Length: 347
Image (tube, rainbow, N blue to C red; front, side):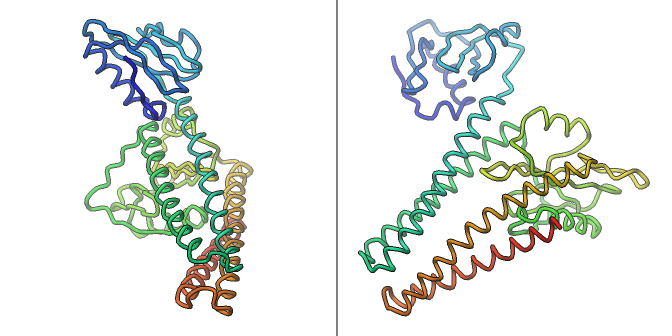
């Protein structure tokens, strides 16, 4: 019997559980074809066993932990065991998911800017204006839906991998801070001011910061912009007494917010005390922010030029051109503000 599972490699835990259920139903995995996304099963007596799917780990790594290698296909190895004592860290699996997520993000961004530029040029040339405008709006909505779904799916996987399950208290106070990741130094200063006012950061979700009444005598916050996270670095920070309040990875940003309480009279703790390393992290955030800012400033400037051209020559309905002009101007001002604030924060 063959089963087709197109996204099995992005849902490892669910696939392992599915294989266990198939075995209990009397179907044991016989062959795996990763590229074709096909699972081949053979008929056996019902059994109860655990499955482990590993990616690019050395052969025999899990044998001593009670696992028996069932099969290997390309970089994937499938183990089964009755009472295993060692489990995969999932680090290499998640690194693969992160790489694919970033490639998909690049593709979506390229598609967005291509459609935006192409639509502006075609409308300026009055070439099939109505059709291309409708097509652009449909594709733009599809782009936004795909981006939101991909972003939510990836960060759900990230939290599961990093074992982060935030439980925001009912009494938590929510504060929204738009664009905080672009001005990390100023965000850190803001968190310190909130603590001085009696509010301690509990968790960050997107643009929302959740605070609880102050419990610590003193607290230190760190906002890091590092390369893609790994379990070793997270374990080191955790064992040093730091608590992760926010972890986020994307194409350009790998941002994490950490906190550590300390007593009055003690030296304020820091994740790194070397000024060079701290400036390196801030510089990385500055470069990423400026690259994105310049990109949006150029695109919005093009939109403003096209809108003014349309209003002067009546290529499009006046109301649509005016709305596009106002929206593009607001986005342009926002990214100019982000650019100035990021440079100010670094200096």
